Image 1 (spheres, helix red, strand yellow):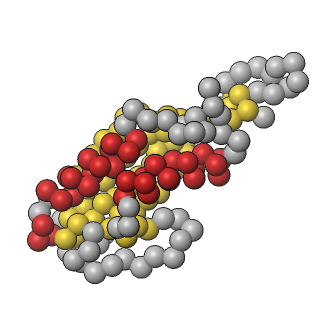
Image 2 (cartoon, one colour):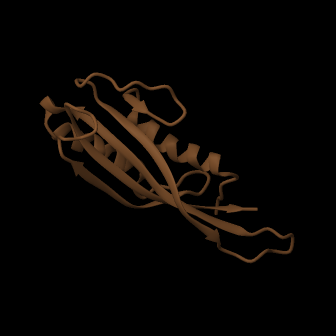
Length: 142
């Protein structure tokens, strides 16, 4: 079973699963400059939040222990209102497919993948919003 060398590697692997399916569409990713496009452009906001963790094993003969890390990835998808909710659902299904039943090279796996519809009264005026939430879990050994 693969394990993440560090948190940065695991986060990068989890992000790549999203960017591989999102393609060239606009996306707000932490650490990258971004300005929300006009209300006629499809875009997404990707965030990760670690929430749980703990020691999963006793030390082995060389003192190494397994530690678990978990949390949630939040992907907010914004589509123009004039396209209705159909485009938002189609994009959300593509994002769900990026994670559902998958595992990263560093051993992160995903569960409890869900879509949450948001009223048109979002934080981005003039946009339809649907969120995809993905719980993740991976181990580190140190």
